[in-house]
Length: 253
Image 1 (cartoon, rainbow, N blue to C red):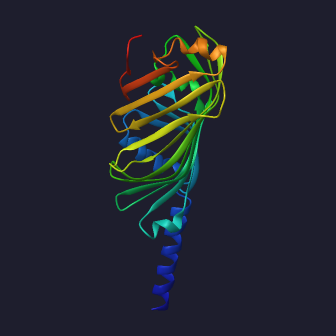
Image 2 (spheres, one colour):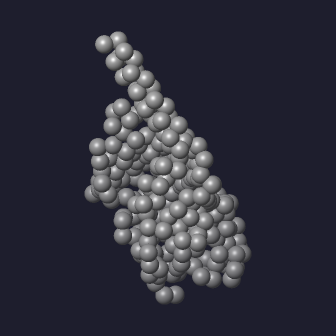
Image 3 (tube, rainbow, N blue to C red):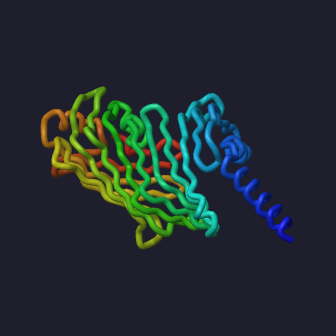
């Protein structure tokens, strides 16, 4: 009987050791099999704590991915993982937990160049510059339906070049879950050269936004001539209505 206990204990320790030191490549192969075209290279570490030096889809390199799994959460049936992704001048990190059909996100932060906004803003004569920072304090999704969302974003040192050159200051957004279950928010400025007031809506299909813009200096006023529609009392209105996989529809000037 005692020998049976020793054998059982040895088997448990052996299995635990296998799990602790299970190579990261084992887990990533499972991910690759579920995402067409995705592959990871330069993989190191374990399932619990590891990294992939390169995450590729086709020939496009999306950068480095690191992760750390919290093992104790698995005892409650929850996969709790901290992720850190770096792709050139784009960076994101945060904590995700999934269990019982619910995905939760905490302290998610993403940072990327403002050039990413070019397609959404749909201002071909002007190229945006600066850095955009997005912070999601808390989020919760049941399937594809959002149940909780709190976050904000800032476009730091906003500027444009091209048909006109202007510094715009800082532009802020606050977003969250709306009473009807959609995602929406407001935009304003930090008192810089461009005055901004507006709101926006997001959903799985696309986005809608209406921004009231006015200039506080001559350079911003020149840049605004290439944006949106003029308002009778001065300033401009920019209305955007687009889908994530299509180019936005913009009112003609």
